[in-house]
Image 1 (cartoon, rainbow, N blue to C red):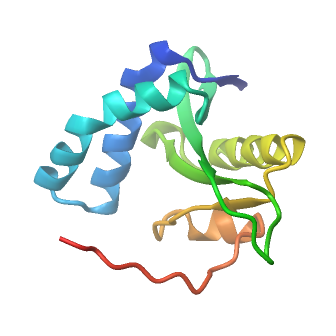
Image 2: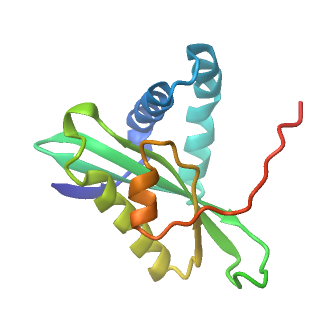
Image 3: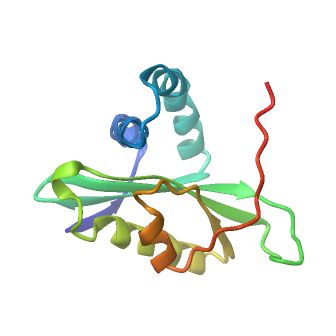
Length: 150
């Protein structure tokens, strides 16, 4: 297995994995298609400005898994003095490569990057497929509430 960072040339692969992730979770095709129509331009902008950092696990020349982190400006608070948070997203393993530890390896790369760059807090939204992995790495559920305004 080889771990490498994603580049602008990888936008199509990242989008493919993101689409598949949402389909596997069970989102309706219309909702996935709608969100994916806007995603490539958002991703390009975030990659260009350095706010999206991604990793791929390559096995035998194939991209077996991917994961990303979106760096978000954040206000200092009593829980963290860091002015950036890492939002973990796009964690996906291709079906033929699942249960080989690739997602764990990528998550460890994200955690190490955060340590090296003084990013004190990582957040993510987990599907039922990822909960066991994330809790084993030390992620804890929080008291966050959401409201969709529209």
